[in-house]
Image (cartoon, rainbow, N blue to C red; front, side, top):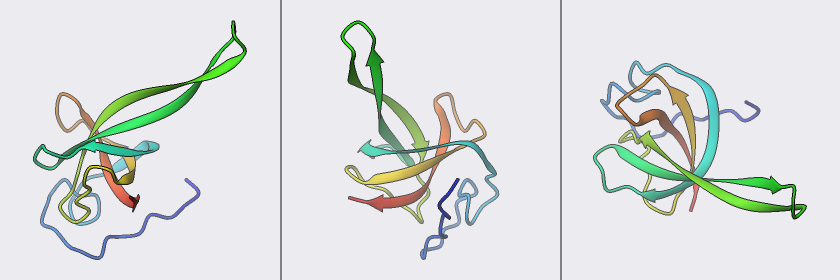
Length: 104
């Protein structure tokens, strides 16, 4: 990972927060846009990727959705661009944690 992730200025008491709790991070890092933040401490992130179609010699845009833990110290809202990192399994569908807000 080329860029250093800064610790948020706010503090929280969340045990699943990678900065103020005991959550270890590892593996993959993605950047995406938050499309849903209505769940408690969980956000849905839309990841865009380009896929090459050999028949037409062009690229097409594909998306996939990932659920990620949203610590109270970061508190990402719908529309924010965020960076997420892989962690241990948190629930049936959550494997990632939001580590940084990149802007709107």
